[in-house]
Image (cartoon, rainbow over all chains, first blue to last red; front, side, top):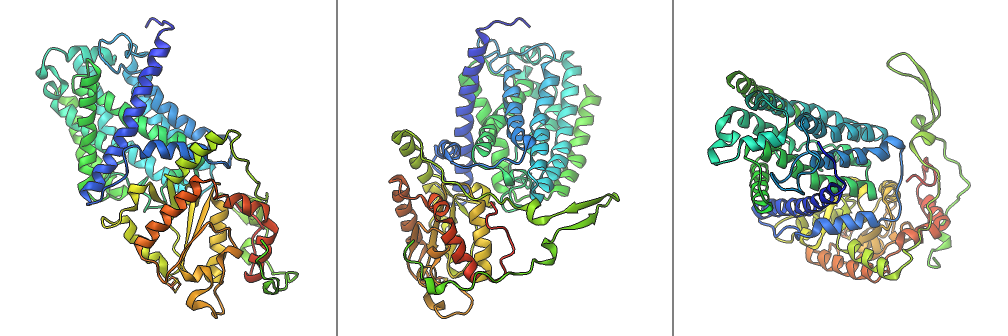
Length: 301
Length: 230
Ligand code: SF4
């Protein structure tokens, strides 16, 4: 990887676009859920107002260093995911800092935020946070298993660990997409996708009606605003990875917007029509259905 | 705070014995260690609330107030019968979400405390704790005549009469009980007050802390927590 200074403002621009796209997307999804329930729902710009409000709160309480670092880790997980993955294939400025082994790094970053959160929520001292985090970690770990297997399957198929090369191999027509060349891996990965997007039926960890809101129980003001920012960025970053690995990547921003929108809508649409699973039910679901498909995907490449 | 009735204040010198579970003691952890715990110190903060200054530039403060008004997060804490009138606000018929009003499950993240009806002395204690855990600027809305003057519980032995003697109330919504339409109208009114910069309840609470505490302690007989417990 060659580094040039111009990449820094380019990467920041990409980040800015993705942040706004993410804030609008989350609002659109909430509006969708509201419309299904027959309500008008929140305005699409509500997320911006909430963000400003949380930054504008005058008082905040610190529970210690890890508590402070929790949201920071979480946000760096989201931003890191974007910065080390090529957003637009072939674009000179939205290439970001992708390099030969970025697939492994991406897998790591997906998990990084959750771990940081676990430390932070643990230090907040609230029992609900601690319970919420252990439930969350248990569920996310099993949900990520099929994804990890799918990624190995892809690495064997394309003989590379670079996302850019995987995208390059999928160019030149619809039927070159992994979706058609390795459907089992895609199915396995979609299990993980639906499972980790924190939408129903797998959102019991963060649901306000459950052990109150889980890990972020104690987070407020600017801490919460940081986590909200991440909640806008992170799902988009994850969707970008899925788009790159399985759906041919994107060659321009229009293609990016459409593909990410469609992919994002999969868990959203599943979410609005399904009630929540309990944690042990979702764990059983992923072990029973996701994991075998992932193993099959490895065996059949 | 002139309108506090001095005759209402009761004997403040009376000491209340600390509850068993709040006394300092030694406990043995599951792995055999012996540790000393002091619940009042470990679980509570004893620092008094501070008055927080507004932003230096009026235009910034106006912008912040606009954002605060359009993003009201309510603490889902129902005290009296009025709580039942809040639920319809989440349903398709009224849908308060379109006005930027949302419900949060934890006091840390909310900035609007709705006291929805009569407040028994026991609940007042919890309401105070919830209020003090919220982050400023924070607002209190009293719902129904019970919070204004005691309503039909005026001569009850166990409920408080005027809410604003105990917590700084920004707005009352009258009625027994107010319909969801009245609640929505009240929220709109609250938004106007916030945008005009008139909702400084958190600072008022900090400034008149002693008075508020005296009032609270005058009715809460088993005061067994520190004076301030964020
Ligand atoms: S004002 Fe009426 S409805 Fe509201 S709590 Fe009091 S008695 Fe109940």
